[in-house]
Amino acid sequence: MLDRILRLLASHSLLSCSVVADDNGSFERLYSLAPASKSQLKDAVLGGGIPFNRVHGAHAFEYPGLDQRFNQVFNTAMYNHTTIVIKKILDLYKGFESLEQLVDVGGGLGVTLRLITSKYPNIKAINFDLPHVIKHAPAYPDNGKVIVVEALLPVGAETSSSMKTTSQIDVLMMTQTPGGKERSQQEFLALANAAGFNGIRFECSACNFWVMEFFK
Image 1 (cartoon, rainbow, N blue to C red):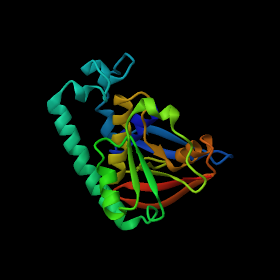
Image 2: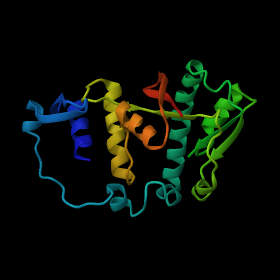
Image 3: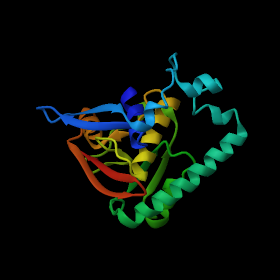
Image 4: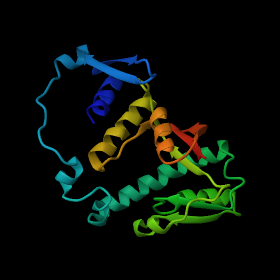
């Protein structure tokens, strides 16, 4: 948790960051004060828990049901953001061409599937956003694949606009969801291996997101 906050601060030049590697090829980030941070030090905020829950009294995914104004703003933002990203991905990624069925896990209002099936109408689309169904979901077939669209965190702390955004989203996930996080390429590979996949094909990137295919 602390490393993720420090990386965000380093991406804004409030801290300095260096990366060292051990004999096993693993990386470790080391942080130190930068000139901008020496005059900005504040007392640490004590207490645990998820900050969003503490402020609003509800989980981030429960809160929209309690605040209709927020729900409308959130859905509109997700609709527009998803439309921009998926349209760009459809220009670059050809991995949908051979699919007969596509399940969007956590598909929300179904914007992603609507855009994909508008280009590939032969695909049977399933918008999967019901937690109680997941325990009954069968494994994907031998000729299937898992497609992940996510941002990738760098190993070190970079100061580009795209990496600032990704680091901010990472900390946002940490403050709003239990266990929520963005991942680096190495962390996605470890996740894939832990889930029984042999590896990942990093197919293309669009709007700061990578299209990844997990394969067995």
